[in-house]
Figure 1 (cartoon, rainbow, N blue to C red):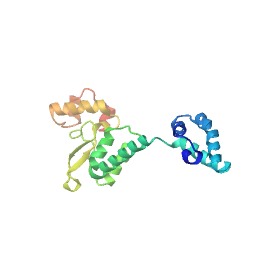
Figure 2 (cartoon, helix red, strand yellow):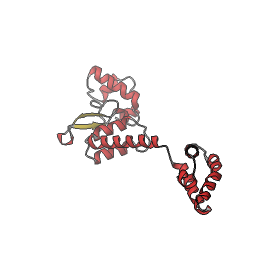
Figure 3 (cartoon, rainbow, N blue to C red):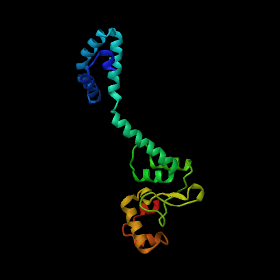
Figure 4 (tube, one colour):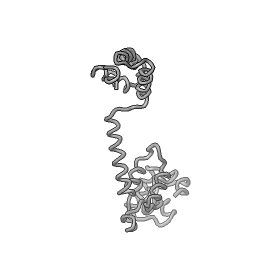
Amino acid sequence: MARDVASFTAAEADQLRRAMGAKRSDAKMKALMGRFFAGCAANGIDRELATRIFEQIHAFSGYGFPEAHSMSFALLVYASAWFKRYYPAAFCAGLLRAQPMGFYSPLSLVADARWHGVVTREPDINASLVHAALEPGPAATGGVALRLGLAAVRQVGADVAETIVAEREASGPYGSIGDLTERDSTSNPSWIRSI
């Protein structure tokens, strides 16, 4: 736009682009403002319109981002949407394993998965892994179900969950809470009640 309305050279337009992309670019943008207004005047654009155009360019510098960033973000969004559509249980399991993620809580992710037809199964001392994982499920849902991990249980966490899973894999399923407390030296009442 600066090349068209203000007759900026390619180098000047690139300086403007860089100023727009730089943090705290106000000083750089203002340095180019005089040249922009002179170029607009030379092209018959009055000061009021030139000011409005420059203000819009300046405002864009506050929220715009580079094309490469937008393209990589678009690819990420497309791939995420594709996985969510065709492999919703695996998509949810991946998001749960990536916590803390930011926008959505694990509870929201599981609720959304259920809303989209994913069979979700609660954490189970004898079936869950440390983190969310897929397991055989009903044929109607693609033959998979999402099993929530033991680390998702309040007051358990990944370290305790790893100990529980390792002991279960080494010695077989737990028969009772008493069996769990006997076999796991890290057991304490707070997380046992949560399980």
